[in-house]
Image (cartoon, rainbow over all chains, first blue to last red; front, side, top):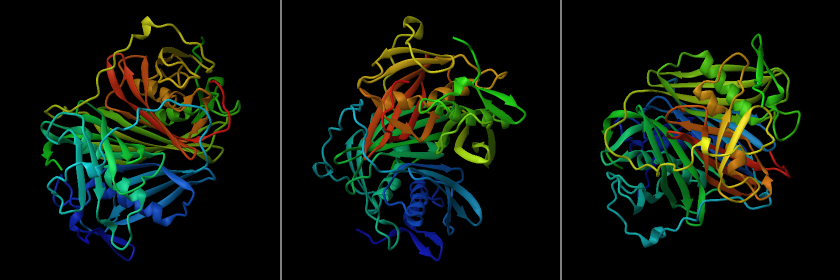
Length: 258
Length: 257
């Protein structure tokens, strides 16, 4: 496993490393790291012990390149039960993305029974074959059902092996944030590959993952007049942890399946 | 069933009407109208012809009352393919909620086949009877399956015949926006009623509804340490149009809506 990281820090700036390369253009960053770096700066900058990151939404309205990045955070609401914190992703003084997040106070569940979906019955990552690794070891995957490049419902285990920012071990939130953008290729691609580029990501979580493996199950995709929405349920090995949803635009160019 | 509006306009302010009353207290507004009024002001204040409101997210961090409201919008990104527009819900100089939205340019779908969930096979609203409810205003509900106050999975049709803002007919986007917050009582309630108060709503749409009827099917609910997430798939009579998701906090004892 490499010791590479997605970013190294220089003062207040984050310098993108080769691992950050995206699928739409080799000179642009992956949506994965845009989402995760926004979440990273929010989590690292504010005292949030006792609060659960229940939602992280990132609007991605420009495709960033490899120039140094600054993330500026802003507290929208600092309440006893609800904290709302934004982050802006800037390079060269230009805004490329903007995150909003909700952090909710942990207490205890309400009484009573509420309908929930059936538990996820899938093999553990250790029980599945290791595929040829196409990402230099940065991302491990174990396909459960449905291959990229085909039209079928996909289920997969994913695990990131590199630090987002060199010198800072991945937190549970960072593990989810790095995976969240992959809801787009997993839900919005088909037998011709990925032809929709997502312009946002919304992650909902009721709890954090217990270890490094994150499960994705594509549960939704629809498109009309070139506007697509897609969604994946998120799991860890003990059950459901949340969802990742995206909207996106039809692209003339088709991205290489990841 | 009167068609009373949720708000009337006085100059730049919106004055909440009795139909806007929420379920968490008689002096506070329903999340439904917070979400919809933010969406209303974005849709009415900006040139968005040819764009689909693909996402509307509303952070609701204070419970607003019946004082006059102003909604200020701000363009975050004015791109040719992507427009990002925010709105802030302000009353008496205090911010109660903040919306963010993405509007995506309509073009043509990409080629190829992508997996989608099975189509929704339910009776049309006309084939179902009205379901009694205690919501103020002019909301009609037709339950398909899963009664309120049970832990069954819920499906229903909804329509609202009241104007959001008096004098402005509901747009297709407003019909969905006024329904979106009801994902919380349907996804996050069970055999003890609704015990989670939502602090946000996120509506995703790939297209707008074809008529007044909006269909909901609960697709998700989980809760840990008092933090719940819930979701419904959103339909019209022609098929799936989107999803409404939210996060929520455990709240001591709320009853029926």
